[in-house]
Amino acid sequence: MNILLTPARIGSVEIRNRIVMPPMTTRTADEEGKVTDETVAYYMARGLGGGGMVPCEMASPSREGRHRRRELGIYDDRFLPGLSSLTDEIRRGGARASLQLGHGGGHTRRDICGETPIAPSAIPHPVFEVTNETIIPDAMTHERIDATIAAFAAAAVRAETAGFDCVEIHAAHGYLISQFLTPFENRRTDEYGGSLENRARFGLAVLRAVKAAVVIPVIFRISVDDYFPRGLPYAEGRRVAIWAAQAGADALHIAAGHYRSLPSAARMIPPMAYPDATFLDYAAEVKKEAEVPVIAVGRLGDPDTAAAAVESGKADFVALGRTLIADPDWVEKLRRGEPARRCLACNTCVNEMRGGAQLRCVVNGAAGQELRFAAPKRPKGERIAVVGAGPAGLTYASLVADGNEVTVIERADRPGGAFRYAGKAPLFQEVVADQRSFDLYIRNLYAACLHRNVAFMFSADVMRSPHLLASYDRIVIATGAKYRFGLGDLPGMVLDLGAGRWPGFKQVLSMSAFREWLYYKARKGTGEAFRRLAGPDQKVVVIGDAVAAGKSRTAIAGAFEAALLVG
Ligand SMILES: Cc1cc2nc3c(=O)[nH]c(=O)nc-3n(C[C@H](O)[C@H](O)[C@H](O)COP(=O)(O)O)c2cc1C
Ligand code: SF4
Image 1: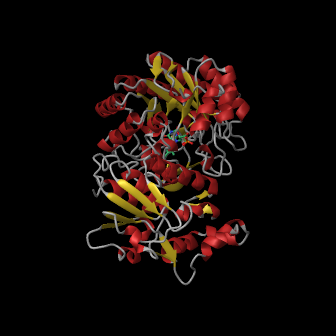
Image 2: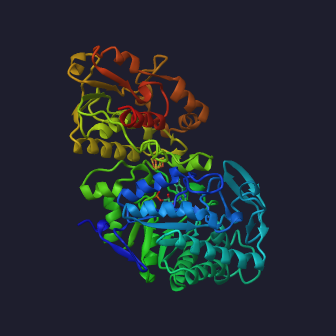
Image 3: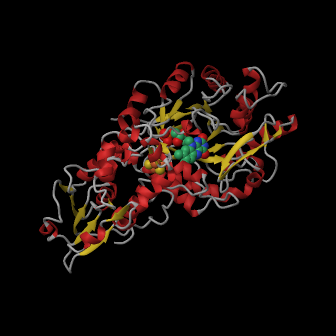
């Protein structure tokens, strides 16, 4: 039995396996913060997917701590009915439900939280929520500190009433408790500032108050390293984690990073150029001293890496964030021995969410839209030819493989399409590109197709041999886009030579105007030419870049729609 699938406890709560989801803001709540049907459908999918615990996203214990529009609300009893329906649905799938209590502190704005934000000290805070703006919060008085601690306790009671099995205190990433911990943001000279004991006082007081208020287990999530000068250094972060365990935390969730991290805030959600298991050694170090379970997080989506994290004793639980956005059924697939859809670590989900959008994913066209895909209409009992083994073609094939006889026909000698080059460009979306991420994604998707008995014909050109398509009921054209202006295969060849890393070239290829031109104007869809190959009785579907040249997310989303919504 895979160790990831063995049960374990957090406090009094038994969790069916070692995989939990970390809290991730979705913006699916309504403007007020009430749970919507979309919120329920999103979390229900993660609960049904087999994970042990589904923690819901950061919710502020008081109104002035709200850090995003459409943030989940817990600061008033009026949120209880929605939250109760959420826990019912998560638990119906067999998972435990948890809620993260997080106060934005100085990392919010008046237009979001309704008043001047509060923080340990009145220093400028850069706030990125839809727009970038720097604010100066009010320094918290002792009365404000006491009231905020009480608000955390009251919110925990509400969470318990709503049926959550655990609550998690958010002391990571630069929000209020983390602001108290961080010397740069905490300039206080009273008992809440100065020494580490003083800077930790507020967070530990919150923890003790929450523990005293509820019976359910309390998890303490902390960034043990802020990664910037005068941020919380690792030696101190580790100390505070141990103190939290001694103060009654039932589990520690070891994260790292802060909005002020260098080289950028992206470090807290490590993009593709960062190594797998980015923060695991921090968790392992804490676990040596802590007498409570430790949850590790950060690029643990490779099943072998995740299993090794638990097997080696470095962590008791692994939290899979973007991995479960990309494939909510990751755990069920692990149980069945099926390859999962692998997250690219491209951070489009979080970057677009911070920019104001609801949660979406490049490789999972249904993420954040679970309601729309709730009753899929797949083709049934057909012989389907998918022309093109790029990300859109493979995605389509993997989604319709059950109940159909599917063959993917590809001109090249291997799968991958545009993703064979994507990692050779300097950037993918907003992050530094890394070819390994694309190769692993394609390898898994190809393996998932094979697992579902999809057949493959490589080095087969249907333009030259149209008879290859003759026996199919449905022809799905996923042939991508081709370069115009006589460029042909030149851009791919140049990237293959490593030009994406050459000075000068790299700068040009990173310019957003140039990239937009390259995606949209320099290429055109190839679908129409292939459409002519179909006979009059054959259904033809054109998907991805073959319809119109664009970005991968749109191409893969098109494959989801064509496979699951059209029938
Ligand atoms: C879209 C998105 C939203 C997030 N929102 C939160 C949040 O509300 N609270 C939090 O503590 N971390 C948040 N995170 C960070 C994750 O909990 C997690 O620490 C991070 O994604 C690294 O784990 P992973 O590599 O498994 O994705 C968010 C991450 C993403 C991708
Ligand atoms: S958008 Fe990118 S980083 Fe986010 S879950 Fe999807 S593949 Fe992973």
